Image (cartoon, rainbow, N blue to C red; front, side):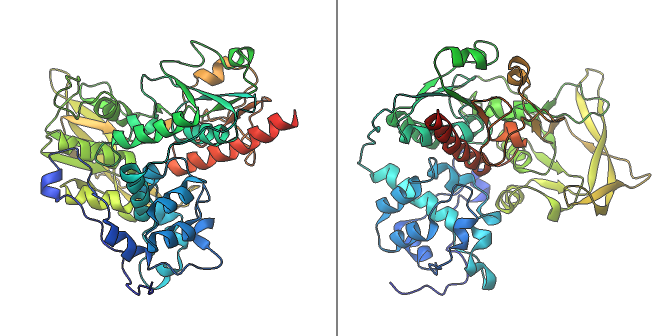
Length: 463
């Protein structure tokens, strides 16, 4: 097939912003077969494969893209699945623009190949047309426990199951999926997609026990007593950070974690569910990451007339994906850059009515490499808001650390691990994902799960 010299990505069909802002259906509707082949033929099939180097789970990107050009869509999916247990998820929420696509040679003189969109296409094609049943491998007689069913835990479980391990996942919530189901809205990642990926792992033989809070119902040491030879801790970072400013106890002030959990996991986005959730007309979301974008866009869909993103740096410093910022703007979310909250003000009933802020200017770079925001004296002003959502990050729940003797953590409460093996300070205990890094991306958590699976396999075989 002829090489496609098109300099821009094949556009992804999307719902019209005026329509989608009133529903929770997926924003991007996916490539057709013709669109996928057209985009795939933009790939140069480079010999040195820089895109693969940019992928935390080492997907053989040129191989699956070439298979799409040939119309071998099911083979493309199989190629992705060799190293990625959650292709339909990654195709939707992975920040390809800063990873695989950032290394794409086509990006030097135009836009890179739309690797994420093609991964999503292959995964969706398989879900619609795939007939082949997954056959569990021969058991190897060894047992491993996984704590948490988020992206790190699911990936570690999948990789170990493929090697014949008897794997059981212990999930604290009533539904598996971790941040994939409680944190990411339906319009970005449909719950049915996550469920299909989890079903695939179950077909591999992975067992999942829900409503199991490790550190309370069972300790990590009790898991070893039950016969597990290694434990992987991938329990995420579900403890929200708050603003630490006066008025934070007012009615209508909450964490993005709670807001999104009520919408996603507790199904407040569905009319048939009577989920208690605070609804407001003017909403201020403090933060500049993907979680802030998700909270703001959800607030719009729940009927808020005015939604503001309040961020203390400029737009170019925002950690959120460019696509999410673009979609939020299309949907009418207003951005207040170089703005930081200093206090919350309420009415006589104790409900929040305004967010007091100050203007900021950027100074020299801080430890993160971004320019440090500095308050502009005398710039205090009010933003009217009857709901304020804090989306400024999460840290790990200390429960596992507090109930597992000898498990080292840093000052932020994140578990300390060897970067190569993901082994903790305790023999046989491994960890990865947000419980190690703090809140980060799905794909980085998956990469950590893969590393840990390799190390656990070597550790058990060496015994």
